[in-house]
View 1 (tube, helix red, strand yellow):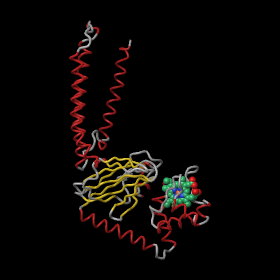
View 2 (cartoon, rainbow, N blue to C red; view 1 turned 60 degrees about the vertical axis):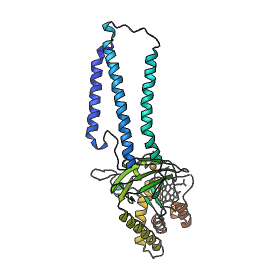
View 3 (cartoon, rainbow, N blue to C red; view 1 turned 135 degrees about the vertical axis):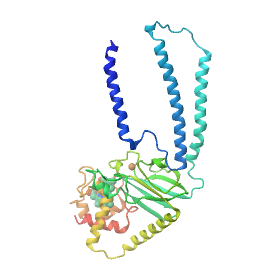
View 4 (tube, rainbow, N blue to C red; view 1 turned 30 degrees about the vertical axis):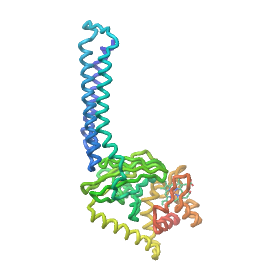
Length: 359
Ligand SMILES: [Cu+2]
């Protein structure tokens, strides 16, 4: 009989459940609930979530209590007989009207928040264009003439075989996005290649970045701070290696940062005119290569046979200079190699060319 098997099955179930629960306690930083976040919209979403969760819990308790009570009090061994009534209008009206009222209640509280969430445009102070690229993000400050690529930081790449003790492993970038507090920031999302998703839990922003399509979202930071996130759409080999770091700072720090970004860009343009020693160029090339090329062509240039060509000893790379530069600058349509002209400045392209071309 099935009941003779019950105790051992129940035991396995109980042990399983306990171990799952104790696991989630051990990994407390992942939490059991969603984060409340740091922006007005994230808090609105959080309270909406709590209200609806509360309603679901109450319904769950009522339904399971009724079921459990009926199963125990009307069990066959007690000689219970099924009631023989049909088509009770009262019951049918009750089970239609009660859920309807609950749904209307949820819709009323949700609609305001959803409208708020969708309204990225009204009164936006700053527009940030976010582009997903395999496997990094480009940030362009519309109206500010500032644009840069944000890559996984080298210190995370270096310890991939043993990341113990690496603070913010895979959650640190070389160039964080900097934004001022108390301003409405509108994000525009787009992709250069496949679908990515820009996800920063504390901002309650998780939007797909889709090639050929622009979607938006927004945030207002109330406190300075550093907020981290990741790409949340499986986008290829290094999907797990394109983190997001947003730094919220005061208005004056933001202005300073913008100014320093602009002078950095000017210095980079000017450095293209300067005479570079071979040694400096190779060193610069190594940095550019590790940040921009190593994900596909490998840290040592060995590539991945059958998927990404090796750089070392590659006839195209060590052969005709113009052909090699053309491929890097313009990319190759239909392959994973994107055009680097919008991502690297002239000196960086020259440096990485010098490095790879020298074998
Ligand atoms: Cu991605």
